[in-house]
Length: 70
Image (cartoon, rainbow, N blue to C red; front, side, top):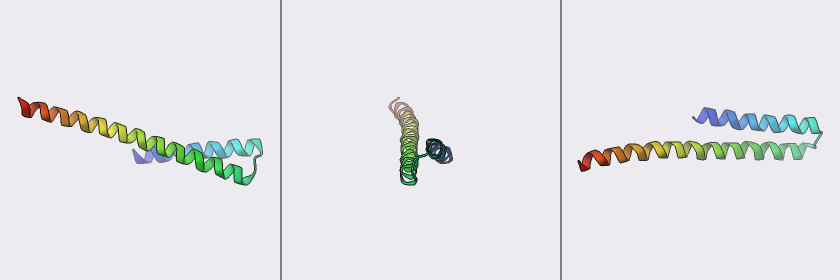
């Protein structure tokens, strides 16, 4: 999961770089946009991965509690 998140974040940074080169922005503006897009996608991906893991954890915990109550 970590590899997928990292690849998506790098893809976003590459897209920001290509867009910046195409629009002829300056170096600092390009670097800032690359860092923001990388961190944004990385944080969103990490939050989504955490949500998926927590849902599966709580589903398994609920099943164990139901079997203990019976």
